[in-house]
Image 1 (cartoon, rainbow, N blue to C red):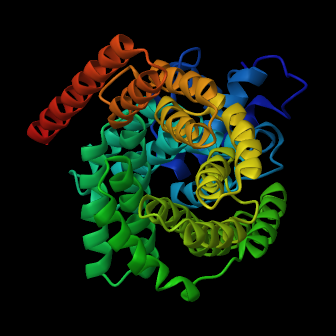
Image 2: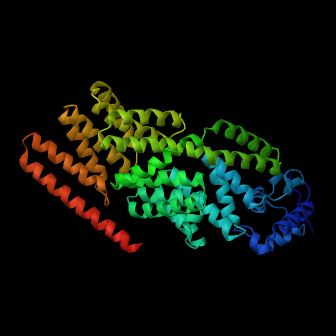
Image 3: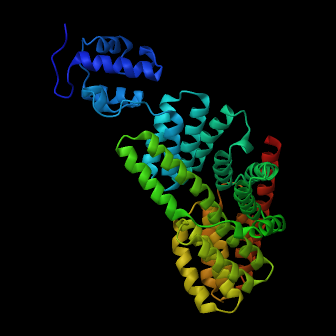
Length: 441
């Protein structure tokens, strides 16, 4: 005997038929479809028309089957099941356009259903990228390493995974691991004649090399990248139009057309990312030119890099440009501009991760030292030490050395010697940490 008819469904019998059809199309058994609060036995009774599902159960069944709630309830709405590949494309585009909520929902959906190991790995990559965007690099590493296990450790065959995994390791101070990942990918993309991938990983490698203090290798790599700058453009506007079209057709339940527009947007965004990488390459090379004493050339590179970034960069990326510009302005004898920009940068560094914030404070300390503002320079050195003291960080020894020099100039010899000893110990600890990482790899 059928249960009492509920207002959110047409009839229990019709709901049961549609549920059975959707389950068969999805290739799921009643046991596989079951979840807490909805057992396989209950699903059997629903399909027989003996029960009417609650609104909450109906929604969860629809989500797991990839159909609309309305279709199960009344026969209207989306009846077809979107394949995982189509959902992943939409999730990837949402992530690239910073629609993080939508991207999270789509990745979680694929991860929950995961028809194949590859789909599960792709969803884990997306979730790792989301975690990294949200400032959770260790969670990103956990997700991405799990995906890498599914791929049998072939990191160079999966650029999205390698990109975020390498940057996450760099963020937590494991620079040797990051460099090893990026070097492997640079070689692999070069062998495949993949210009897009080669540019991406060459810049990432240069960034990690600079953070580790290997300026020569970084400069060589960046020089090769900038030589090919004219091959790339800035097509983000067109990508956003395609993405809007994709969302429009998705609302209309036209999954095929929506997926087509999403794929077009994704193809364009993959190219656009190289413009972004080129901007970062200009910033990194400017940093190297400053180390070589070529401040005017550094300013030229920074101006061109900011033109390429053109509002598409994050706040942290813009801060990095300003840091190098502050150094360059001080070096070319424009102290008032350098001081004003330095004060602006110091405020934005509070929200950066410890590695970037610490390095930034050491840079600003050097600028204020050049400008003759010793008290401000010492304050920034102490701030750098405070945020860098956790872990083996190459800039901690730099910060202590800067502080020692400032204290010596002020005639505080004993304090300067104590700071210098701490600089030496920090350098030794960093070397030991790198040796352990090399042994582990």
